[in-house]
Image (cartoon, rainbow, N blue to C red; front, side, top):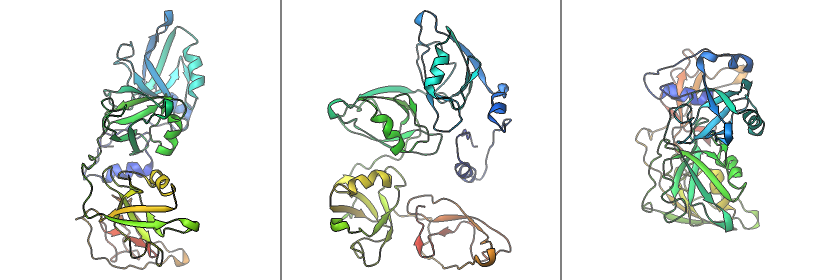
Length: 377
């Protein structure tokens, strides 16, 4: 859809591609209902044969896909190998030496590779060749990697590089905006940072394969203005009384989605503001899961809070609409995903003649449901 390969995308992600522009361009091919039929679509695959005789290296690195029952994902190709230019990072290998490797663990597939001197690979080309590179970092002796990664944009993307520490071991080797597509030989396409972290801690040496990717907005070079400090306490099991969302970009903080009435945060923090640091550690571009580790470091939680970025698209004047589900009635409205962590849910469709018709209109934003904020959801 619009030039983006969709095999590993969810339906929701595919719909977002379609609605992202006024015109959608589709590239289609024959589809299979079962894994067996999928393997027979040989007109859509490419086959190459590589030579292992005399101890030659294939020069290609494969990893298991994050998607069940998929083939093996190519994570790197050596420029000095005979495979270079014939198969590319992101391609999906479905057969090795005429044996299906769909859903097969990499360890089992490796036995097929070493079973003979020639290796025949059948694969789907799923990506445009890029200038990928491999970087090796060390965790030995408690060393810091010096790189901060974000979440994958979708299930076919790698982990975006959000920040590289100046003077760290990654400085000069990795650039902000690149994407990590494998860690220690394991594909991280579409993985969360939580799942990918398990590959980092497997051993002291951390081998990363990176692709140019799509650069995120640059990190701010100075501290945001109009910042206020708010100190809350977790002592004795107290609740903070504030609910935060995900950062919408690598340069924004965590949006305040809800403040519990009568809580210790009430009157100090307001819905729509952005938390930019927790206990003096920046949370710009982080997921809530990443930032949560800073909250639990001690009983005192110091938040730096700033006003939300302006959003000219969003009307500041709201309206209340009440719909009924009694007797199985349909609401007659279809909503999409929030565009940013401080935006509401866009109205994508209103069924003609339904109870929502004339009350709600396509393009409006739903900001709360039953008095619960849905900003950034």
